[in-house]
Image 1 (cartoon, helix red, strand yellow):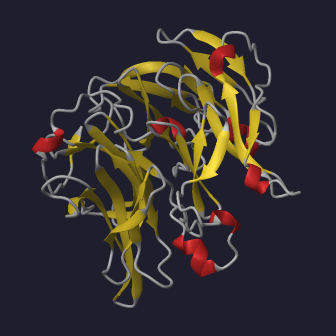
Image 2 (spheres, helix red, strand yellow; image 1 turned 180 degrees about the vertical axis):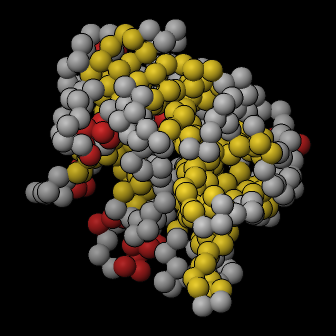
Length: 408
């Protein structure tokens, strides 16, 4: 691993948490998917929360009921037509520039990045629907939080701004931590700023987290020699306890080999070592490593480099859905399911309404939000108790409509 330039800070209040997944406190990696790193579905202590059409809704799994997250008795919620009254609803969250939803230790968090009439703002929502409040604003002109997560009472985010430098448009990118509790509450800390010589950073983001580690991706262009420019992608890991940042690498890795998205399985990380010289059709090698990126070893290999992998805490899933959608010559869309010993125990596929991978969900169920041309929308779920008996068949989702969306 390579040590990166870092503004270190260590919070003793967070040192006691274990290096495993802590439900209710940690980033919910199982509700993201490859096509969108912004989760709009979160598990809470007493049910689930979802972000849809400018409002946050509560889903009672036992009663299979979806309701707006607002306890005001005289509020029409999403049925209100007057914009001012809509915005006064406790559940209101403008999804014009939605960047996801996060649940952490009893509260919900949402970042409104629509800066057309106000500063980008972090909101905190009470999970019982009793209220919401502005928690933090990014007031420096031109600066925008883009991709973010909440993990163990800290907001981690990329801060971006464009500026003109000698008649050229350039951009500022840095990775920050904003504690939401404790003595450093709402005091932003810059924990990474790309400044390696010869590197032009274009993307900084895709944050995920597990245990005492936060991961984020950096991509851009690098010079080889005086003029030649090549692309690069690398993934950094931030140690919450020590404040140190390292780049995840494997032994023998070349400049043409990249590590992008990491997935979590059995308290370890799993990732693809992508070889840019081979391209998507080349043989892919997937590695498993400790959470800090050390002790990496090959877990398995595939005949293509664009399979996606997901973990739900119990099973590991391998999918070619992205290749299937993007290539006319791709193999049939198929998911492979592996147990804790990496034995393949089942395969399944999805219908054509799933253009990309769906959020893999928890050990028991996978949840998605569906919508129809009629305006009806709701939740659909897949019951994972059928794993082991699918044998390549198409999985079935059960629909739970939001009653307020059904036209009379």
